[in-house]
Amino acid sequence: MSSTDFDYTLSFEFERCSLVELRGISQCLLLGGTSMCIPDFYDLVGETIQRMRKIGYDMKKWEHREMVKFIQDIWLTLKKLNHGYPPTQLMINLKEEFNMYCGTAVPSPEISPVTSPEVKVPKIMKKAKRS
Image (tube, rainbow, N blue to C red; front, side):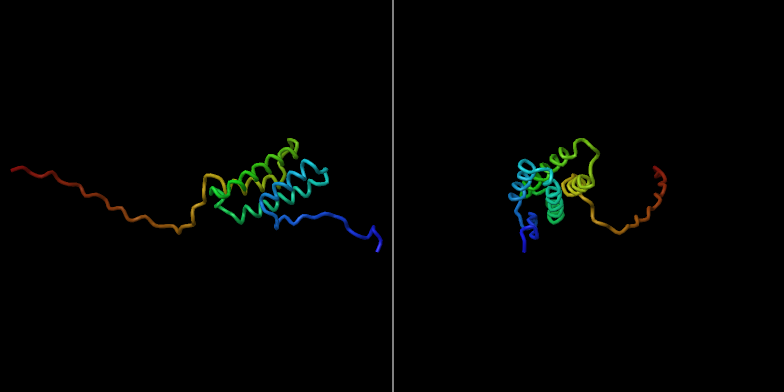
């Protein structure tokens, strides 16, 4: 086997990384990497979206504040990488997911329609006679 037959491609298993490790990897990819690292950063964003879906509406809780800050940092980085062009589908997905889980409106549970009770017509009262 010659040295040219071996694949030296580095691949990340983001699903095994903690949030702190993801933050470090994102900084390394963007600050110390070349433009060839950008697809890896997009994969990291995809993993972040998956984790956000797992957490769900609990994203608003205090214990997930670091995840929220990480997502906001990723959003700002995506905007910088986009250079002012219209948002990419990845950016749209990230923003929609974040707004769904961290927005102010929480979807109400589905309720079957309820019929309103019948309204009785009030009776007209006659004035009482004085004797």
